Length: 294
Image 1 (cartoon, rainbow, N blue to C red):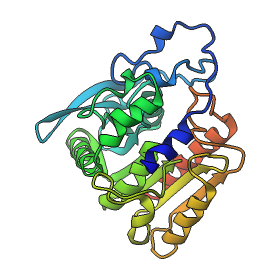
Image 2: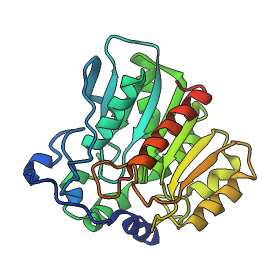
Image 3: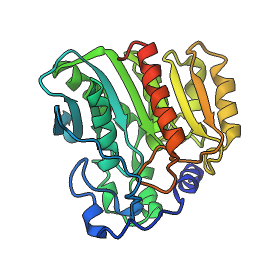
Image 4: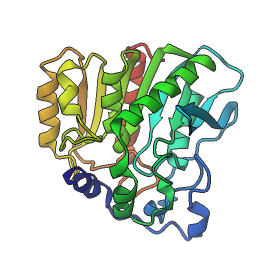
């Protein structure tokens, strides 16, 4: 429960009125479209829109032990042998922002895959408040399930034009924590970039380990992009993670943005900090390039 409280504290920043756009027009209606009800209204004036010209985009379905897992796929049209990047969502699931991030990667030559990792627990887009979403969906998602789903997504990529010898992962908030964990879970991952993912917390049956617990044995280099003003992820926990990483050999690094809080890359929310978001994005691309993903 403490973990959920910390995540909640990070996420409840105020959001501005969405420039008069009809609320219903923003609702998440299909994978990669619209936005979750819990984040409305949207900061429409700052939301980035990446077109799909020259890309193949849309939903694919992957069977994982009998469960159909929807995945938003974006890639250069007609291309194969592509570097692969897994794009892991916040608690709001694969909505327009996550799909747009995938398209941004695809424009740069990646096969970008954003799986809906909450599919067994329900539709995260349908809950009107973050508190309800945390209680009804997020608190019921086992880490083991997430790791298995991501393994299946990587296998799909390998069979569908992706070069998984050039495999990267990036994630935001909830997905940032997953980025650390999956980078430890799958030795095929060349590099990870974790955006403001929780680093410490209570361990339980569903979440038996947190990033700080795997840091000393981590082999994959992960870049952590965090905000010094994050109310739910104190700088003290970043320091704790850095200390744990120093006992291992992953050569992971942190960049702490002193003027940003949580979700500073989320261009559809009031938390967005344009300068830090752009710098973080470039650092993400440079990190992948430096570690054999691009």
